[in-house]
View (tube, rainbow, N blue to C red):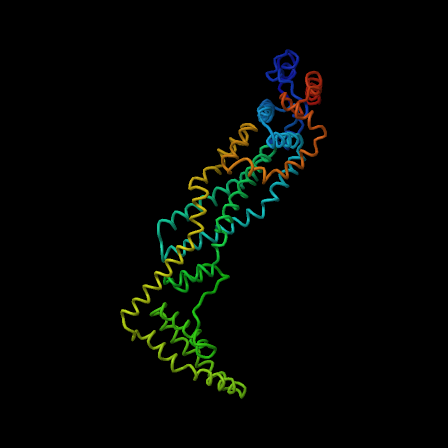
Length: 439
């Protein structure tokens, strides 16, 4: 219910009839006060008990938001080529809530999978870097980890902000979000860094650096990294190369191999006891023993040397140092694509994704928005390679593109068309007031 003045008129009636309406000179279309437009285009959430002509607070907010929307296209005449066509498409999209909804769904659906892919990649990579750093840490690894974390956090905030917005600002920020996500992922794949989340490869590096089996296992449930058991080496070895590989792994593990060897002997006895229980088992045991006899002398000698430390201490130390150096080289090779990625994007790239700065630039005018994205994402050509398709779909729906372009250059924009202003607006507005005052 509108507040009554001493003369019996409401504040709105007094403003209209006395000509003191502070927004009367703007001559807005009644369309901007319709609830679906207020919420779907302007992005203003109205309380259920709020209806046209609305309280002073909401009426002012609606008009200010509409002025910002119209002001967004003030630089249209400065645009040319793809940017002009894109601006026409955006004008068309912003006219109706249904178009905004369709546009946002279309543009987000094209990068939704890429966003999930990036978040999984970043999460895995950060986990791997953290684990490797426990055995071999340097400034480069720390810097790369911080860089990836900043990009991950920034993109998540951009994605969350897009979901939280409504109306024309949601559509604009969806453009920024989609270009951000695609650009970051393209940089990752171009540098080869998308392949650096292989947990098996990371596990090998960690093992060579001396990490424990427990630390390696924590890389992920999908990876079960264990050294080959002695039973497997003795009873299932088809070549000297496989045996040598086994002995080499024992040397790398050093003292821990003693525990493995002791456990292997127990396992071997259990297998032997189980096989003795039946005839078929005895045959299997006999065949296995025959195979083992072919290699056991060599195996025993090498295992003894590896486990007892009977090799020359200097040779053992050299082997250990060589293994560590090899592991460090593997780690550097692992980091190489990530260094390339960081250098390519620049350590300050995350600042381009700062939500507040981006939202301010994206809503500061059509020319400002394109300029901002062009600078952040290596040129306007890249921007349109991502969003050109969705925008062209709506540009194609404009019935008279030349007339629309002429209107845009003149600063006119639906729904503030001349035919819906002045008398039509006042008539509709007063009608809303009368309905609101009716008992």
